[in-house]
Image (cartoon, rainbow, N blue to C red; front, side):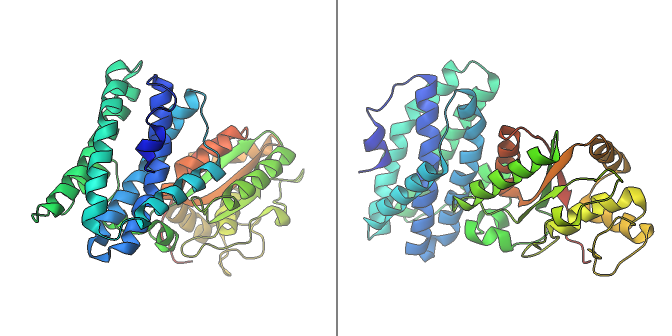
Length: 340
């Protein structure tokens, strides 16, 4: 059974019902296209880009769905992905699955048109238009392949580029994205009213991250000052990233700059010392201003604690949203690829 067949008579064509189908359909699509990429390596770039587009759209739909009172659990998301992969495996020829998907995408076009036309906000109208565009992009590429006049998936890549995703990123499989270093690593900081609240949030985030294949954040740590203004060593994350900066380094830098490096714990920069070196690394590596660090320092001085999470670009929005749901106030800072 296809996703459309399963949901044709489910729910209703209310705004909430269409959002549910859209959001869950994107999780299904991630599993479907990732499996197809393995099955048809001759179309790997375009199929991986389709999976990237579906994955992007899961995050695009999420805040709208939350506002409408809907939630997809991590277990449900994985189940939908497995169903998509199973559908892919039922077809041994690319031509067969392409014909099916061309008809499948036509089925949801009226829903997205209705969403856009009846939207209560401009943002929701744009979501409907974008979802319609992405279905047409996939359909046009598959039609071109069946016609023997491939367009190379140009509309798929154009959609992703319009949303800030380069071709190189689009054709990088999701499981490999954590291994791609560069300027796409980010630090999410979320402030909590107390150390206990931050500890609980960090623990919850770890459980959330481990529960799903869809979210593999680099590292999590808690930044907190004691009553003497020093960092508690055991609160720094000890896991380095696969590439780039580890969370212990990132949080240690934040703690170090206001004190000229005196509060660095355990030589997190591999022996670097002195406010000048740390300050330079801080500004180039963490992409923070003096105003940023002063503000963070004031938060910590008032007894607040911060959960710090290193993410890759595809994960950042979901992690920030999760920390917000856990009661934190998140902010995001770019992390450059800087050799320590």
